[in-house]
Length: 161
Picture 1 (cartoon, rainbow, N blue to C red):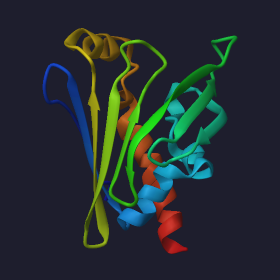
Picture 2: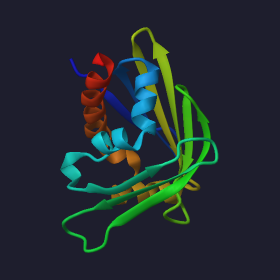
Picture 3: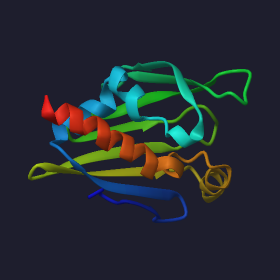
Picture 4: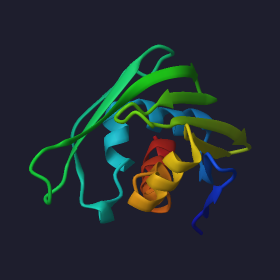
């Protein structure tokens, strides 16, 4: 049985996504922090995008840069930011700096037996910034269910190792 993904607007500036994953926090955290694993689940297949490059120095003060291609666009799309806080197997906080009204994303990993409850909070600088992100489909929550199904598939292989 698949674990459901919930997406909820919690305030004028906040979107929250939650999902329980089958596997320990260590494995879920690893999937969020190793570039070779991120590339296996981050992009929902229905979006038609693929990684060109994936750089992630996941530590407090580190940076990331994800570059994607899409058949409808001549130029690749780059997303980048900084890791504000990284607590192994528990929490990652990063900035999204591709625009002036970028959000701050916080992901927590809460181990519950042999499962992990993941909570992702996207905090935008204003109500308008979140409204615009929702309207354009650019908020990270827009493909969360499909994205997290891919993460489930990856975790099934990691947990068995």
